[in-house]
Image (cartoon, rainbow, N blue to C red; front, side, top):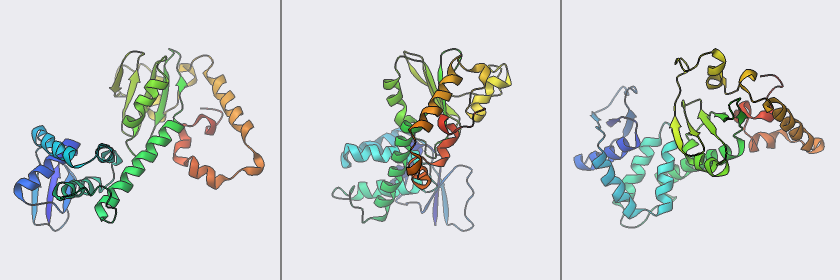
Length: 267
């Protein structure tokens, strides 16, 4: 059994495929750095990420895949599942080796696995657009916290930039500790260290710990608007048609933590 170890980046994955062709040895297992090795194996090869190699692989894929398939392939990387790297590597290998397009050959196990993985990422993208809830801070910035299963924030960020172009906002992924800030002019990726001196009080850091603004940092009318939204949500519900099973299917419980209409009255 041959094991390739790479740095966990998308460029590193493409480099691994390049090196596999160069050595004519393809990995049975693809591990990220610091991941434990299995008990038994024949060879371990460490991949050194090389942008020149990764660009050559991507250029080759562009010649063999449609634009739609390329987008799906790139977005699948955001699934962050245990077998994402090896499934993607085998998929790309088959695409390069095939004489004809195989991107819709769902009888192939790897093509089917990658397609299903991409669909899970795309579902996360759709749900983020549905379930992100902003809170207005006292400086006028709208902030929202998320913890998606898939790293889908980059796929929705331009949607919010277009929709809320006239207000400053921050969407922050608490699980991965990064987010995007829009200042009415530019959009930039940001990270925060809650132990940094920039947070002069525990209240300022609390948002990056639990995703909810403390009352002292809220805009004057924010609490009122939250209560109005909860009242509206309750008023439009039809008691006789309440279906908790379907509600959990359409609005997964893992999102409720940051949904205003599902929060307790007190923070």
